[in-house]
Length: 173
Image (cartoon, rainbow, N blue to C red; front, side):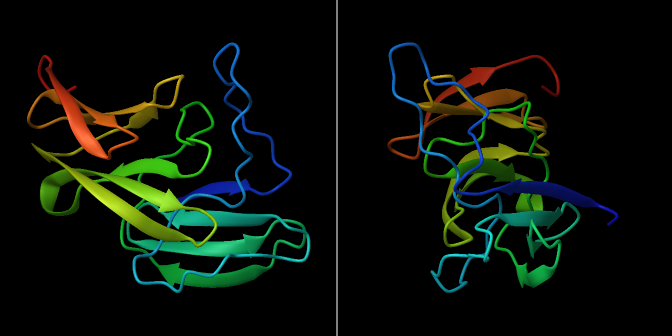
């Protein structure tokens, strides 16, 4: 599958990010990563309980598949292009997936509900892209995204969904 990002998680998949010391573990991810604006708000489920997602990193679509049988369940249009997700980055806040997109070269943070496979919020950074990554802080209270053309990092307050701060950087962070 050329140009695709694969991710899968479900009710029994462990959250790879350990919680801060003294804090209860975050709920486990019930689905995986990407979403479609305007899709019905119905959960994605399979007999085995695990749904995998294959993201077209070159365009706004996602293919859902049953992890146990590897059978395609559906391919759906998305309201955003998921450009990068990795188990090396912290993108799960315990309820939602946090990622980014830059339609028309304007960087925005994208918040996805994996239970409904839907974009629930986009947060503009007021900066020009591209962007190359988004990472939640260990306490999952702030999302940092780079805004490469305008040379800054945007700090997004996860609770309010607002840009809390902008940190100017050197060229093309």
